[in-house]
Amino acid sequence: MSVTRGLAQKFGRVLGFGAGHIAGGGAGPDAAGLRRGDLSQAVLPAGLQPANGAAGAVAQSAQTAEFGGKHVLVADDSEINRTILRTFLERLGFEVTLAADGVEAVDRWQPEHDLVCLDIEMPRLDGMHAFLHIKDEASRRGLPVPMALAVTVNALTHEVTAYLHAGFDACLPKPFSRGDLVELLRRRWPAPV
Image (cartoon, rainbow, N blue to C red; front, side, top):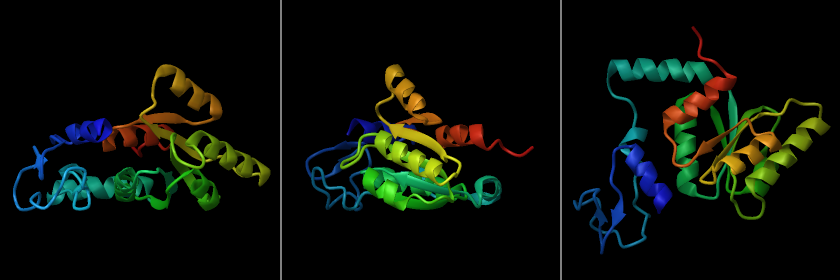
């Protein structure tokens, strides 16, 4: 809940659950049928909605062109986190492949993936070990290792050091904004001038 609350705050929202409705998100008809812990009717934050107006469309088009044609593998055991990352990345022009855990990530990795975004704590196989398998497979085939982001709440200094030592390019701490993601992507693929 704290990660979700932090993400909501980054988008200027307040998130809390009360008896039978979502507090802070409005008690209108959209929240009326929800029960404590029921996210079946949850919606993405306004920050994930399409940009309005000509300026927003131009900015969106420029960023789509900036990363267009690149492929990414996203692995996270949280469907909400996969949806947020997929939405951000697709709007930046990436072709997105999703996986629900580390085993699926290893199975779905393809040489055309320019980027892998891996949650560190996942069932069956964690993100650290999934990336080690992907690196080994790329090396075995004589292929370049894709850019790798550790997408995690575990972002203390010693944890980030371990990710970098394992070969991750960077850590994207949860919760994160679209701007945080773009900043890390531009380390590998600088914006055209």
